[in-house]
Length: 136
Image (cartoon, rainbow, N blue to C red; front, side, top):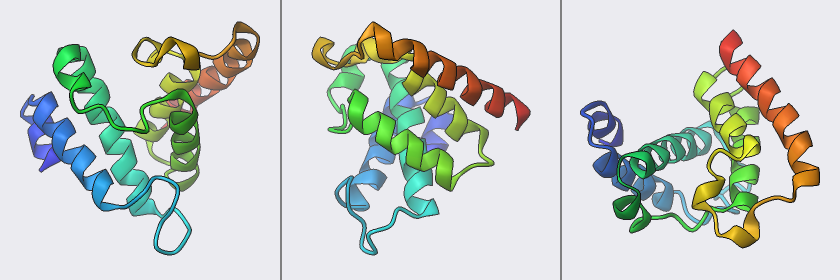
């Protein structure tokens, strides 16, 4: 349903349903088997894309459904797992790149924005992710 709503240009509805799918997977740091699988990665990738899209269309509305994992630390962990599980998925690499280069930093609390010294390394890694996305 989330995909249908996103393709119908309903970013908020798509985000709501994608985030609901993520909720159904259980807590962020645990799975029934203790391992994050491809379904987990696909759900989180879609939820990221949907919420990010909703943020750009209507920030105030989107923030009303902000997921608890929408912070620098969790997004870095999630995006790393996603590119490991979905290595041939261009959207996964794009997500990782956006997270690393700080393009979504305006949505984080100011206390969680990375220090400039570590940011340069993140930008290099983000560029590598964008190149990987372009290759795919």
